[in-house]
Amino acid sequence: MNEQSNAFSMETSRRNLLFAGGAAVAATALPKMSFAATNPNPTKSGAQSMSFIKTKDGTEIFYKDWGKGQPILFSHGWPLSADAWDAQMVFFGQQGYRVIAHDRRSHGRSTQTWDGNNMDQYADDLAELIEYLDLKDLIMIGHSTGGGEVAHYLGRHGTKRVAKVVLVGAVPPLMLKTDKNPNGLPMDVFDGIRKGTLEDRSQFFLDVTIPFYGYNRDGAKISEGVRESFWAQGMMGGIKGQLDCIREFSEVDYTEDLRKIDKPTLIVHGDDDQIVPIVASALESSKIVKGSVLKIYEGADHGLSQTHTERFNQDVLDFIRA
Image (cartoon, rainbow, N blue to C red; front, top):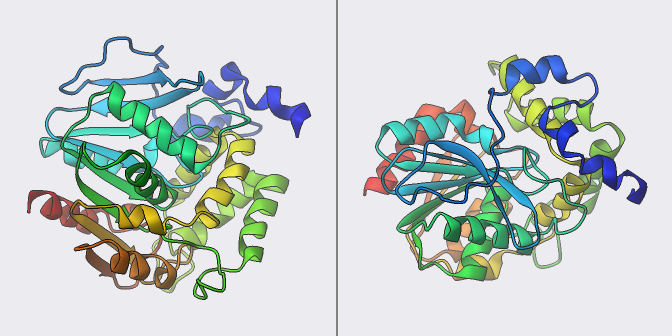
């Protein structure tokens, strides 16, 4: 893959969404925006902006920063982007909160890096963003891989800037089946994800939306718009980083990170999650995080923040205000 590394990092091609056959869908599925240079003077009380920060290793991390008030920071799942949180950004912004969401490196509009696509670096990138924006009394919300990112940030950088934590459909403590984690998923599941992503990620990303949103269940109302948005967000990211990230959401053990969380924590999970089965994730995490609150959505899927938006938003709002 080294011969392809220059192609993966071509900023002009990436930012104009010139992936094969995707321009027409992307034009309708993604919001129009200007790609601003790194903002040298961030607004501490809440900006009305979409911008970039440049990390210590030169990676540009895209972020949205809207509204004013107590800050809420959203971390997205694989292979998505900050846009996956649009419904929550609008809702909580209208409730008087400052809402921030970033594109993880090699995802969305952030730099597609060849190296550094690992959870330590993801957490460090998040720490740089939090410190750059000087976020305090922060509410952190992480979905799926983003839940691992939030947990690892807290374990690696501490909780002094954080007020509350929400993990939704999150991968911790460990997705991979091991002798000590018999309820996890076998390695061949993740090898299948690697194979699908490498050989035809365009089709794979479209296909994975069916179990991701529970569209294969009786009575499910399929949204082709949601499917196309997922596809467009996935195709905007870099394939090398997405391949590397599979290890981070499947093989990394977040148990020690969870033990270090000493802030009020809400854990939300669907009991019909076909991507991150609840038995090896939320049910275990809720035992590890002291004083955590577990909310199980009966029959809900992995993408419940989009399929159960109203209920999820209200549950999180109630938790924040409690």
